[in-house]
Image 1: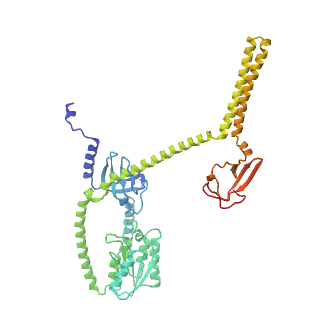
Image 2: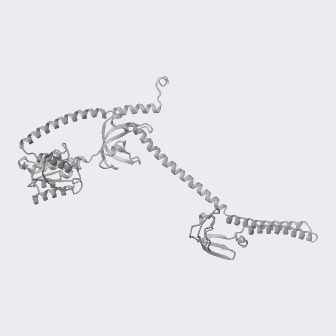
Length: 483
């Protein structure tokens, strides 16, 4: 008891905040591999899912801003590798991963396939430098195999225009990504060789993932490059991207722009000079990038500098919760309104004059039957108690008087019923209006211009057409036999 009294007592919010600070500062950058399950996309564009393996699971959040860079949205069952940091969502008291980057675990299979293809072609001798064809010093016609809509062709044209006053370029447009891209690239190389359309070829595309560059790792593309009589310069991806086409080609350029510069070199020593300049630039950029990366990594370790979601995550999730609660409240309100409407419709049906008349007739019938039974009982009791001969006249008089009063009351009720019977109103000059299906028309709102109606009069019906509809404040604009 003394120990409990001395121990500090925390509120739930204080404990959650302490856990939040400890976990988030401890796990600021981590990578986790697992299977996606329970994936849900909110209307706000954020994704909530569970990352699991055979023994455990953890919640994960991929916010809209971080999902824009994905080539495709993950689905349940995908094996992925996520990078991010731990975040504690205090309102629910659970921890989760805020996902910054997401990649698919299947990339490892492509790397294995790429390595096997590289070993296979290297054994054939397709990578040997002795088989590389020399590049022409002054090519007259330059052939390009790439996408006509990408930035590659624009970069090549920009370099050639800057370095040469006149040049002849032939573009064979192909797909550089997706199904059928490899076949189009190989066919374009074969066409240039078949008709001897160029002195040198540039094949390439911009950077991308391993899947995006896979067309340049296909064997029949490598075969087309190896058997080409025209020298080929390969410029695929960025400096760090390497594919099979780079090893088979006569020369690999780090970028399409560099490929255009290489093939337009006027003297051999310029190649050496440019190579030295390129090496120094690469080293300088590499050192600067390395230093900048170290600085950036230091910032990334601080969750409040890495992404605005460190501040916005709890509020975004609360907003999603409020949205779900609001949807449920609207559904409940709709159900209540439906029940109230059904009750009003039932009350209207009860107050219908036709139903009231039927109820009144039933009451009269019941009252007449009860009166007859009462008189019969009274006559029987009087007959037993009194001498029938002495009281016969008196009884007859009382019965006639009582029956007369009842008949008079019954006649009043019948007259009252006849008075409220709509058909009796027809004898006084009134009429009743029905639509074409025989439904009673209650107001002007039930009428439609040029609509067909029926007019119930004494002795029969008349069919009319509605010519004009107006209220009591407006005078009719024309007169005719139509309503």
